[in-house]
Structure formats: C-alpha cells, structure tokens
Length: 45
Image 1: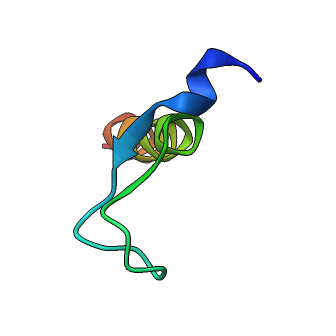
Image 2: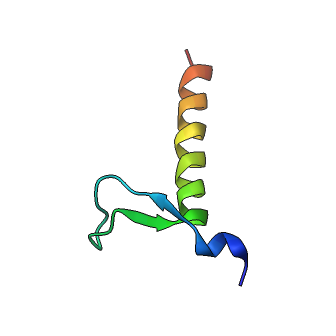
Image 3: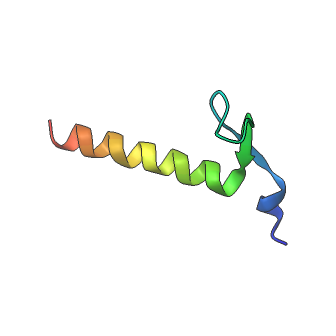
C-alpha cells in the first residue's frame, strides 16, 4: 500500500457517512477541484 493512503484530510463539517475526515488522495482531489473552479472564475472576469 502506498504511504499516502495512510493519511487523512479534513472534511467539512461531516460527509454523508458522518465522518469529519477522508483519505488524503480524495482530499487532494477536492482541493484541486476548488482551485480549478476559482481559476476559471478569475480568468473569466
């Protein structure tokens, strides 16, 4: 197992499963999606 699967990232405030965290790779994908949306918004202004 890759080491990054052992780490967790925050979820806000609780996800559908009632957890306050999720695995780091999924957290990183969430952060990337928000950043992409922000950059698209800034680029269109």
